[in-house]
Every structure is written in structure tokens, then in C-alpha cells.
Image (cartoon, rainbow, N blue to C red):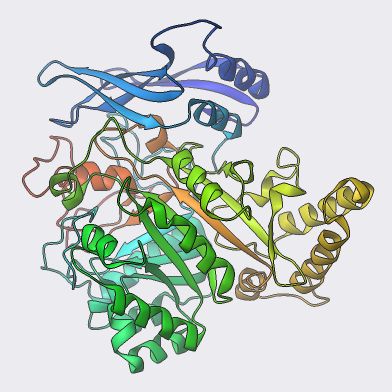
Length: 536
């Protein structure tokens, strides 16, 4: 791990406790040498070992070593379980992109509080423990395990047993604020959160000064058919993250279990009419809906109220892990989606416009921000920004907030573009758009935290690619740096992929046994009552 300017290797022995070894005092030099290991020598034939990590057996979920190999320009995990035998899985369709991503790695940020001390090692101490390397960027609260769909790709396994009660929800929000101080967003999920009978009250209770946005992750069925509810959600100030995995009956049937074309169009119409701030979530699956990725990008660019587009390569966990036919050696990964965006966006986006997200593990998320030009078109920041100097713009946020870091970065970018305006394509237009953005986002008055977050929403949009892990491509080093966490009613804050894979007991479907070290909980919104020590 990185700690300040040092590279440190951590060890945790159940008998002897935690120890560490200092590796280097030169983080950048260490990264440079590490990246060189990802280039097979000229003429090399066969597998080239890039590194080792810890993964899982796809059969029994045991933790086991994985060899990370480069083969024919792709990256694979090779594993061998004493109980289930050897296995391998595709991890990335583009080895060069995979290796380059490690150049974006940086030290994490600790929360104000941890839940518990590390005792047995990751992921057995999930909660999260003092060994976790990143605070919570995006907390997710599962408020129900009821749903009005039975999606073949669902990453959970809904039990139709629980709606979170108001007091338990208040405790979850209190705990988040205590650990983080400020939360840019809190996402309400499920199940289908709009099936909770008190969803609007939950939104109200989460809309606190310490929380910038309350986002309801929904399939949109209720929004499309219940106009009174849609208006009430608009009045609440909530944002909507709409599942939209395609535009035709066949893609809906394959991904969500039935034709949802009319219902999705009704939801989109309601969101457009009421101008509810919206993010789109597109679960991308090889050979099923990857040919419609460009349509989603076009929708982002043409609708003012749509702020962000989130592509999620299919993760084979929950119901999807048990029921959805798949090939672990041939799947869609982040660079594959980027390729399709470039191919299907008519030149609006290029592969070079996307960068790994530094705050999480660099293999977890890639993104691009696009600046609204004064003529209403959009241009990726990468066309005029050097992200090696302005990395603060790469954030786990749908929009750019009016923060001091963004203010300083915009000033630097304006200076750089002005100095080389004649050499930058559309340089004069970029300068005009950047100056407008700076004026709008940083007026001559103090902004409230909510204003600082929302004021930039009309200036730039984002496209995120977030690859959740499953039993095939699980990588322990990614889990340790996770910043997307489930906050549960028993006080835990669980890294998303660890919670889905191990603690739900649904990594292959409803019959999967949980690991012996799982901290069992019926659902994220469940009623587990374990009392965990909070570390200050």
C-alpha cells in the first residue's frame, strides 16, 4: 500500500498480529518499475506473469493465490484450488490498459472512524476494519429486499422479507456522518427502493446538511406509472439513478426478464418532464446489449437533466451468478466497453478520453468528464487537460463540485490552454467555456455545501465504468481499496464486492454456502443486531 510518500507491505498473522515491511520511499519510482513488469519481452510466446494476487475459487469461494498473466494482449487470473481444481478467468480485454491503470494508484484517505480492528485479515474482518485503505466515497443503504422484477442479472438475491424501519435508517445515517463527516452522496437501493412504503420519508431523513445528494437507485417502473409519486420525488430533492440496459424488447428480456420498453420510456418521460436530476445505470453484457452502448451515450448528451452515465460490466454474483449463462474466459470488461463507446459515439469520444479513477483501486473504475461548450455540445476534458498535473478533477462524483481543488485546477487549465491556444483544437471555444464554468461555479459569495455540490451540474457531465467483482475475477487488493460501501443496520460499512460475494451467501445463487468467516446478515437492510466496537 501507499502511505504518504512511502510504499509499505502489510502482513497480518492470526498468531503474531500485524507487521509491515518498508519497501520504498519513492512511490513514483516504484510505480514506474512496477509498470515495466507488464511488458512482455519482444518475441515472448505464451503466458507472461505480471504479478500475483489473492482471488477466490469459483467453486467453493475459498481464498487462494492467483497468478496474473498476460496472454495475447489480454489479462487472466490462473488459480488452482486443492478442493475444486484449476480455473482461469478473463480479467481485462486490454493488457496495456490494465497495466497502465496502476500508474494512477495513490494513497487512500482514512475515515474519521473505523468500525473494528483488523484481527484475521481481509476480507474476514469486513466491517470495515482498520486495515481498509480507503474511506467511503459512495455509501449505499439497502432499504428493502422487496422488488417488482425478477432480473436474471441481479447481483443480489432478494428474500422479500424486510423493509428497513425509520429508526434503523436514522442509525445508519448517523453512523455514516460520524465516520465521514460529510457524504457527497448517499444511495438508497434494494431490492426496488420505491417499493418501500415510506420511501419519501426515508429520502427526507437522509436529506441532511452533511449529505450532498440522496440518490434513489430504481428500475423506474413506479416513476413511469405513478405521476403523483414522481412529482413527490421531485419535490423531495432526490436524484434518480435509473437502470437502463438497452432500448429494445430483446435486451430487456435478456437482462431484466421481460420486455420493459414501454415502461422504461414512461420513466424517461417522467424524468424529462419533471427535470429530475438523473444518472443512468447500464449493465453491459457481451453479445446481448453491448451494441446499444452508443445509444446510451447519445441520450446522456441530448438530455439536460441526465448528469451521468454509469456502465457496469456484468458481474456474476447474486441471482445472476447462479442463473445467468456466462463464460468466465470471455466477458465484457472496462476496456471493452470503452472500445464500444469509441466505436458507437460517432467520434464524440475516444478511447484516450478515459482514465482510471485514482481514489478507488485503479482497476475498479474508469471515467471521463465532458465539458459543456457554449454552443451546447460536449468536449472531453482529456482533450485539453493534463491529468498528471490536474488529477484532482478525477473524482468519484457524477459532477464537478465547487471545491477549492476544482477551483485551482480550473485556473491552471485556463492558464495552460491560453498559453497554447493556437495549438489546441477549438482552443478559443474551450477558453470561453472554461471561463463561463469558473464564473458560474465560483460566484462572489459564500456557497452552502449543497450549493457547492449542485452548482456545477450544468457545466459538465460524466461517464463512469465500474466493474464489480465476482467469484471469477475477485482481487483482494481491489477490495482493500474499495470506496463504494454498503452501510448496514448493525453498524458495519461493508465494501460492496465483499458484501455481495461473501456476506450475502449468494455469489452463485441462493444455494451458495457462506464462508465460515462471513458476518451473516439477512440483507443490507436486514435486522442483524451484532454490536461492533467503533474505533476513533
